[in-house]
Amino acid sequence: MKRRAGLIAGALLAVGLAIAAWAQLKPHGDAPKTYGFKVVAVYPHDAKAFTQGLTVHDGKLYEGTGQYGAS
View (spheres, rainbow, N blue to C red):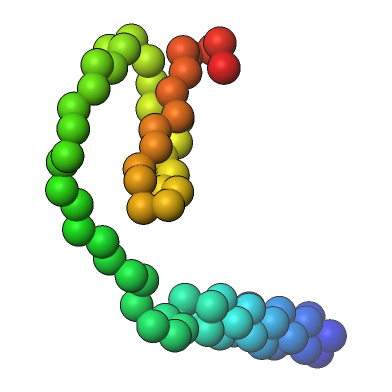
């Protein structure tokens, strides 16, 4: 009897956790904002460098680069 009660309690816990996880996956609020782009200039780029990040500041896109294992 104790084993059955433990199995039922475990099953209820699993269902509760599944419901909580599902609730986190539901979309909340507005959709993400999308942006367009226009190439206004092309600059030399080190072909050996890896892009490590992109950021937008004052409407301009900046690329952060580095070397594998050295940054």
